[in-house]
Image 1 (tube, helix red, strand yellow):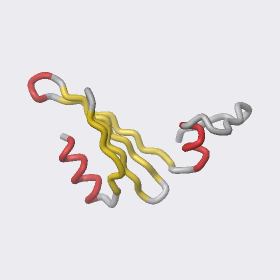
Image 2 (cartoon, rainbow, N blue to C red):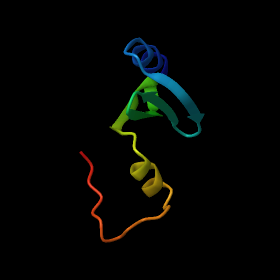
Image 3 (cartoon, rainbow, N blue to C red):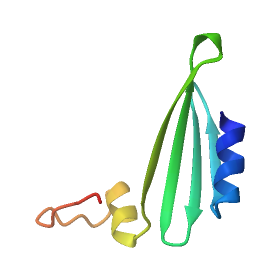
Length: 79
Protein backbone atom coordinates (compact mmCIF):
# COMPACT_ATOMS: atom_id res chain seq x y z
CA UNK A 1 0.00 0.00 0.00
CA UNK A 2 2.75 2.48 0.93
CA UNK A 3 4.71 1.66 -2.23
CA UNK A 4 1.55 2.16 -4.29
CA UNK A 5 0.91 5.65 -2.86
CA UNK A 6 4.55 6.68 -3.24
CA UNK A 7 4.65 5.67 -6.92
CA UNK A 8 1.17 6.95 -7.80
CA UNK A 9 1.62 10.36 -6.18
CA UNK A 10 5.01 10.96 -7.84
CA UNK A 11 3.54 9.85 -11.18
CA UNK A 12 0.80 12.47 -10.68
CA UNK A 13 3.36 15.25 -10.21
CA UNK A 14 3.61 15.30 -6.40
CA UNK A 15 6.98 15.53 -4.62
CA UNK A 16 7.48 13.34 -1.57
CA UNK A 17 8.83 15.53 1.23
CA UNK A 18 8.79 13.18 4.24
CA UNK A 19 7.89 9.72 5.43
CA UNK A 20 7.49 8.80 9.10
CA UNK A 21 7.21 5.22 10.29
CA UNK A 22 5.67 4.37 13.67
CA UNK A 23 2.61 2.28 14.58
CA UNK A 24 1.37 3.79 11.31
CA UNK A 25 3.08 5.41 8.33
CA UNK A 26 2.69 9.07 7.35
CA UNK A 27 3.77 10.22 3.89
CA UNK A 28 3.82 13.94 3.09
CA UNK A 29 3.73 15.32 -0.43
CA UNK A 30 3.97 18.77 -2.01
CA UNK A 31 2.56 19.98 -5.35
CA UNK A 32 2.36 23.59 -6.48
CA UNK A 33 0.07 25.34 -3.96
CA UNK A 34 -1.15 22.14 -2.23
CA UNK A 35 0.06 19.57 0.26
CA UNK A 36 -1.08 16.01 0.86
CA UNK A 37 -0.67 13.69 3.81
CA UNK A 38 -1.39 9.98 3.59
CA UNK A 39 -1.68 7.90 6.76
CA UNK A 40 -1.48 4.13 6.36
CA UNK A 41 -2.30 1.85 9.28
CA UNK A 42 -1.55 -1.86 8.95
CA UNK A 43 -3.99 -4.36 10.35
CA UNK A 44 -4.06 -8.14 10.73
CA UNK A 45 -3.92 -10.47 7.73
CA UNK A 46 -2.15 -7.91 5.52
CA UNK A 47 -5.15 -5.57 5.57
CA UNK A 48 -4.60 -1.84 5.92
CA UNK A 49 -6.55 1.39 6.28
CA UNK A 50 -5.63 4.68 4.62
CA UNK A 51 -6.52 8.30 5.32
CA UNK A 52 -5.73 10.94 2.71
CA UNK A 53 -5.76 14.68 3.39
CA UNK A 54 -5.18 17.30 0.70
CA UNK A 55 -5.23 21.00 1.40
CA UNK A 56 -4.02 24.41 0.27
CA UNK A 57 -0.47 25.38 1.07
CA UNK A 58 -0.63 28.91 2.48
CA UNK A 59 1.22 30.81 5.16
CA UNK A 60 -2.03 31.12 7.13
CA UNK A 61 -2.62 27.37 7.08
CA UNK A 62 0.96 26.64 8.14
CA UNK A 63 0.90 29.27 10.90
CA UNK A 64 -2.40 27.97 12.26
CA UNK A 65 -1.08 24.41 12.34
CA UNK A 66 1.91 25.67 14.33
CA UNK A 67 -0.23 28.02 16.50
CA UNK A 68 1.68 31.09 15.27
CA UNK A 69 -0.01 34.50 15.26
CA UNK A 70 -3.55 33.16 15.39
CA UNK A 71 -6.27 35.79 15.16
CA UNK A 72 -9.16 34.11 16.98
CA UNK A 73 -11.69 36.54 15.46
CA UNK A 74 -10.99 35.17 11.98
CA UNK A 75 -12.75 31.86 11.24
CA UNK A 76 -10.63 29.00 9.97
CA UNK A 77 -12.31 27.34 7.01
CA UNK A 78 -11.31 24.10 5.32
CA UNK A 79 -12.31 23.81 1.67
